[in-house]
Image 1 (tube, rainbow, N blue to C red):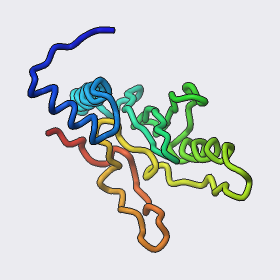
Image 2 (image 1 turned 90 degrees about the vertical axis):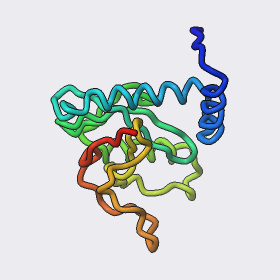
Image 3 (image 1 turned 135 degrees about the horizontal axis):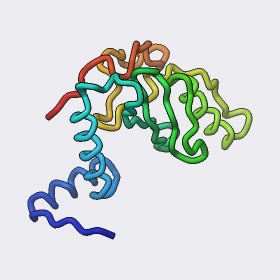
Length: 156
């Protein structure tokens, strides 16, 4: 496995971030590099073929995928989908919920209908589009979002 040398101060910062996120220091670096690559390609992000890394967290499981802004297609790279492509984020979200349901007893299963625009998050920022409203406090369901990439990806 490759080794990366960092200063003691940087290592402490990576350790803090890793502890905060509940992931390894290597995963922190990978996320930062993903964010950098998305930011570098931002001027042409709507070009057909451009795939933006996304993820969803559901029932304590993280599911990785990509979103293609020009076509609205979303592919899930995590198992058991292994690259399956959906026409837009909503059926992909439904597939994640359907799989989670398959692991539950019948009385514990939930509807697979999901707003995929709110379900998936940008891997670069860990956020949905800022055009997505927070969850409705009465229903616990996010209000509709027009697009994952309606707003520029913030660079900090």
